[in-house]
Image 1 (cartoon, one colour):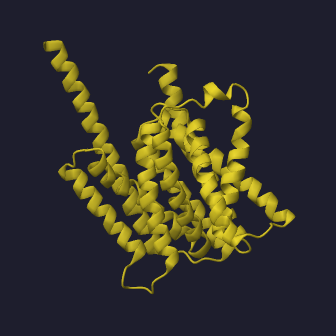
Image 2 (cartoon, one colour):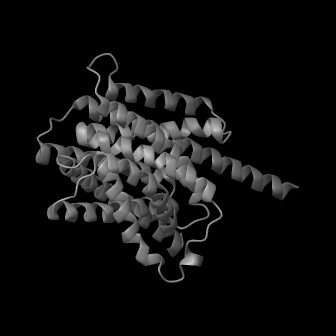
Image 3 (cartoon, rainbow, N blue to C red):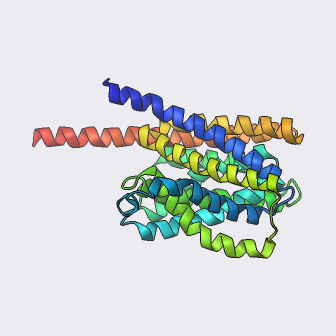
Length: 302
């Protein structure tokens, strides 16, 4: 193994763990700030300060750095990302942090289903079984019919679906654009709509809240950049299991900072969903490797 390959094997998981830590801190800050500021107002400030934090990186030679031929995809990414962000912020503000994180684990499952319909990907027996197990884990989290309806859980589910849609678009964008560009344009397309919606819930933050909002904007940009870098440096199967760090930290923050109880079914459901996602990614990696070897063997024989 050469030094470059070894560096990627180390840097990918490192980026993933760092992004999980930052996301967990970010969600705790959202929960704290939502006590006095509406979640939809937080979405606007998150977009505003996210753009301002990244802007200095593009001031010099912005034309070449921001050049992209994928603006149609960025529009789709903006729409899916906006709905996902509204759902996530509302859920984090109204349900236990562990539950909000656990339900977000369903995003890769919805992405896999979307890829079947929109990217014409084949669904094989093992992948179908893994997706089915993942949905069972999702039912353990939502428990339809067993508990009173909570709009926070519905918001988390909607967010998970649209995060899944965003994952499909991000995968295509990251093949041609740098992580910083992907995150910057995603925020740019969210910003105008989030401002209009924020006007209906407008209030001026206090000095302390301004500090929290600026910190949230910086953290969200950094977390997304690290996440994109993690997937660009390593195979999905290598970094995806590490996403469980986000749930453990969110659970810890919920207990220590907000007095939330630990729900065993939440942890079990999240583990089932993440396990099915990792297995699906593992089988896809094996399939791609076999397909590549078959092509190479066929090429040598011809």
